[in-house]
Length: 292
Image (cartoon, rainbow, N blue to C red):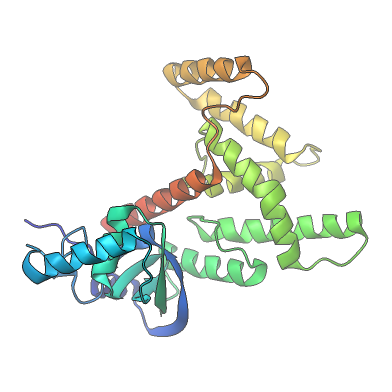
């Protein structure tokens, strides 16, 4: 039985889409293009027509070669439903981009708005509001409360900056500074240590908010975020099995023995972290869909 990409019609029906908004042309991450509008049953997982041959096969090869050589193409058109995209027009260009491992394609985006109920939909609206308030678009969390907590945390950071700099700071300005100086380094460390979530989270951003929640619950405790991360790490180690703890201990010893000029092999770059966040979030969405 052939495997197909996700169907927009099925996803829209499940999400209770009631209206759409035209967002215009913008870059979209190819990994988030997971399905098709109108053609899902007629194409394979590679986004090519089933049994591709003849003119369709030649067209794909021509586009693949041109894309590999840096040719410019018109934007594809897609529906955006939550954090996933469904192709309306441009299936062959998507197939070529996936084949070549291209990260982004320009797309004319139509946002499909789901009903405001259910964890996935409520998380989507929480993310939408978080982006509106802060201007940050790259933070992937899997529950509404995590976005609410993060806004509260960034607001506290904004007040700290105002006191430190003795001037007014907008929330978007504070969010940009916080993202570069606090969030990115902490998420990189979370990934390096492979910390688990204590509240059914899936992304490194989820674990960041787990740490913030634990930090907030430590009444009267004056510690830094890094110290709280260390406390969280120690607590997580205590819940792990002996083999996992032994592997981490050996890895820590290897890192500690490296000369200061050599970076740990376990330390991921931000590009890899973003890819891992995307994959973790999409996997969580797939598992939730399977349960519903």
